[in-house]
Amino acid sequence: MSDIPLFKVVIAGDESVGKTSLIRRYCEGKFETSRVATIGVDFQTKVMDLPTGAVKLSIWDLAGQARFQVVRLGMYRGSRSAALVFDLSRPETLEHLAAWKQEAQGAVASVRFLIVGNKADLATARGAGKPFADSIGAPYVETSAQSGEGVAELFETMARLAGE
Figure 1 (spheres, rainbow, N blue to C red):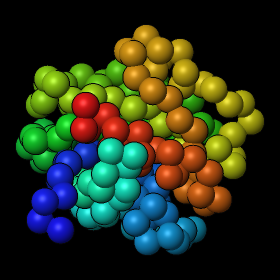
Figure 2: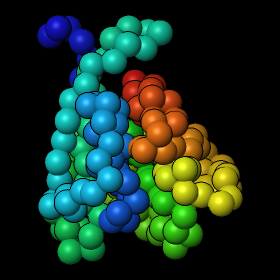
Figure 3: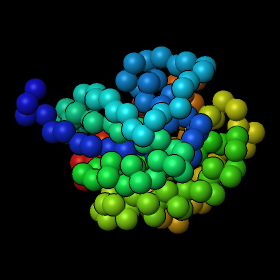
């Protein structure tokens, strides 16, 4: 196991967009309807198989509240890819992604991005984040932590980006 590459990846975005729920769905296979807000940072690890071989993801879940910005800045260091997550049912969370991108790049200039529209099960319109993703040259995926839709694709894409 020690020869498996380890990639640090971060999940960032406004509070209550479902970052922790996406990580729990992927790592533990479960969804909880009520969650306590992440305080500062949390992380989980998961080994996954890619066509190029196994990799281990160290998945860092960054708190979305503004008061944790100072803490978050140090948590980006060493990350290879970042998922910028917004809530498809709350358009203002998409508008904030440019600031999240700037925050991440301020800490790690070479970080690779993935844009994630979460809560697809609640969305009335799909594809909202594609124009922003295209404008920064990032992949775009829509997910539902509740149903599991797109969750594996999200983490597979993050791992691919981290390995490039």
